[in-house]
Length: 147
Image (cartoon, rainbow, N blue to C red; front, side, top):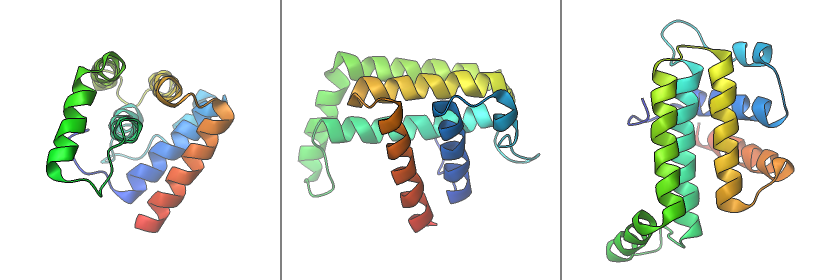
């Protein structure tokens, strides 16, 4: 699933789930976000959103932005691919994708995946829980503007 474009509603659902996890919410709160038949299961949705967000963070950490030329971006991406922390981030998202594939719509798995993603955000940015909630609110505002 993480290789496809996510809808605005999926972005918002993933952000809401991450906020529940960041606030220490329980599985019942996550079940309310699990989605209906025909919608992506919450664990898979969290992995897709998390992968996208962690990639954006890595690009920002390495100074890549949309004002750069294609050659400059390629150079930054090469630097990212050589960085041990970035490679660990890629391994994490791959592992989480495998976990989500067998999790169905399990709220326990969604909570574990959400916590792993928040820990990865902390590792890359130093953001604590309050900072993570601020970041999630900013990302929600961005998703609402794009909707």
